[in-house]
Length: 359
Ligand SMILES: Nc1nc2c(ncn2[C@@H]2O[C@H](COP(=O)(O)OP(=O)(O)O)[C@@H](O)[C@H]2O)c(=O)[nH]1
Ligand SMILES: [Mg+2]
Image (cartoon, rainbow, N blue to C red; front, side):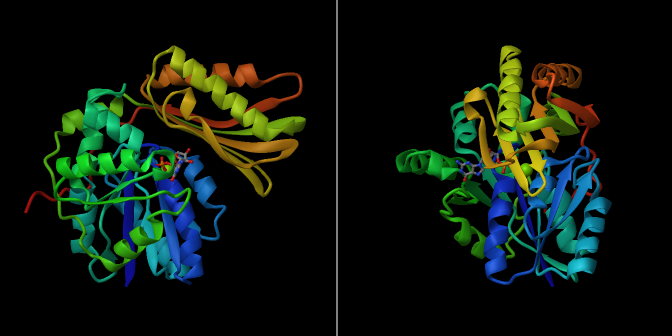
């Protein structure tokens, strides 16, 4: 029987990074794993990044898992057919909630002969979490509502990025989360230094305590929280003789971040992957310009592939305009950007395939 594990949590909480890191542990333990990514549109930076692991990645794009249950099932079937995995780990869209009612419980009932479902893990970025608990931060109240519902419905809350905060800060935060969400198990992890990651994996592999919290969700508020986000997915071919692609990537992200900041548009997550053969850089923005960070290196060369995904509190039209301004600012006599595909949307009203009500 395949074990199915959902790793949820808001945009930029650290889901893909955790998946990336645990593929190494699973390889060490000779556990066969398949991954499933998910987005409202294709050209997904997460799929590109996770494809650099040894693991097979299936993608459900065009709709979230909850609104395209069939798509999720198809992705699971394709992994099972090709791979016969011991476990499948799926990363839902960061702005989705109500997964206990729309995914975990329906799967537990309808697919009980095929899969066993692990605890619904919801990751939480400590900075974002502190803002939510303090009632500060710049996110739209309905987006904050989504984050609170994600936490409330989880079986397990994992406070991420503990390497970036002091032990006292994390302890204080953990105590406050425990008080606010008394029914959830709470752990702390860092994908960067490995703290708590193996413990989390052992727990979710060993437990079937899944989908215990079906919560009341106001779908109008949920829909508004998603609709305030502009969603941009772009893939492009970059050319430029002897270009340092890391420099290009970071200059691009800085330029784009400053434009978003000037518009006072809160960033959910902006993610840019630039791939130059086997070399790649992943740059991320999870808030203001100070949150810009990157991993790895795409080196230098004459051409590269770029994927950029942006989820920002701004209209899709304006997001596209700012993005194109950054493209123009970074293009010169040498460096050219040829856009292969550009989608700019705002997520539609969530309409889950199944929805179980409170038992
Ligand atoms: N310092 C630190 N940064 C992290 C950690 N996990 C993720 N990040 C960073 O958080 C940002 C968003 O990560 P990602 O995994 O793409 O988030 P997702 O949107 O939830 O999939 C990236 O810049 C990551 O490098 C961590 O454990 N420590
Ligand atoms: Mg991700």
